[in-house]
Length: 400
Image 1 (cartoon, one colour):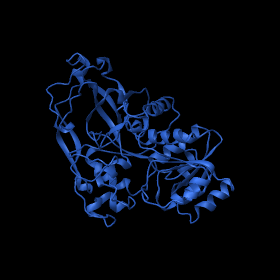
Image 2: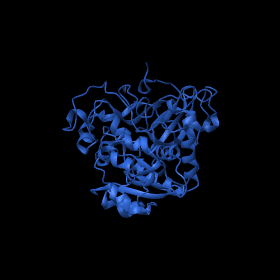
Image 3: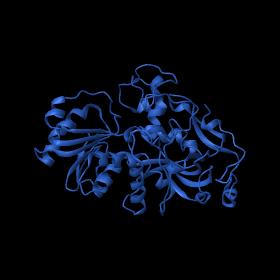
Image 4: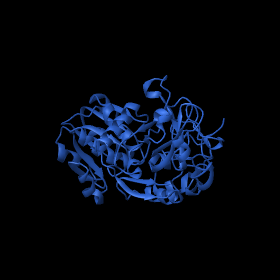
């Protein structure tokens, strides 16, 4: 099977088979700069290249000139092989920098056959990067040529809509398909959503991956105005998105994050704050909410706190999760689930409707970009090294 990096194209075609004048004016040389992931492992597996072939958009696809691409946990998870089911540890800084083969936290050395998020394997070389903002510069057969020049946010979920709704995700940008840590990316036309905004590309690149995941978490849990939601990992990309999106819904937000980040977290709409370092999460929540507990827990951390998170939910409460960086394997007291009639939701595949809602909220100005720092393509390794220190609030982005 031919990978994206192996595509060789003489021209970039429009729907009529020829490039429009606009596209010709924007046409780049046939090579581009980018960072290639050469296998599972540490930061040494990231290889900067300036001779990558620009992908040619196939039928139904568009070619996007990347303005910026956000850094997310999924980039680290894919590179290190953390998704593999043999991994039981949290995603520590050492693990994130060195990968399984070089980390003291790794269960065993791994080759390039480590399972990804969907238990399949990633093929290499691969360009990672899930969160792209940019401009369409060419289109493939069957796509309206007038889309050339459109500013877009790229939905990272490539779907097969013939499958059941919760099983439609077949490719994720940066995993099964090349992502945005390069100057150009080819994606299905329906994944490139037009956006009208005064925000910079770097600011726009903070939204894909994190915000659609967060919105799907809250939508599935049906968070309502007047309800109380507890958000773990509130300083990260998905966490800061959850804070804003819950606030938009009119919910009361209890945020959990490092004590040093309290002021910034409160500025995003958190009504209450619990330091992550607290020894007794259940008591801290009781002090805020009383014995009733919270209506929804939105968890992107997992780990040892998992059991307590179920206990602080009220009867009929909802637990929604999209991450387990503090550890994927934890015990559960099934009596909490059964006798409190709890609902639990796991989120991997936000719907296309969810992504369109994020675009709408960005265009209306209701969502604030949490851009912490921008890096160049050559600095991707540095950006990921800083990312796994977990000292930032919001998002890092790569600007080609």
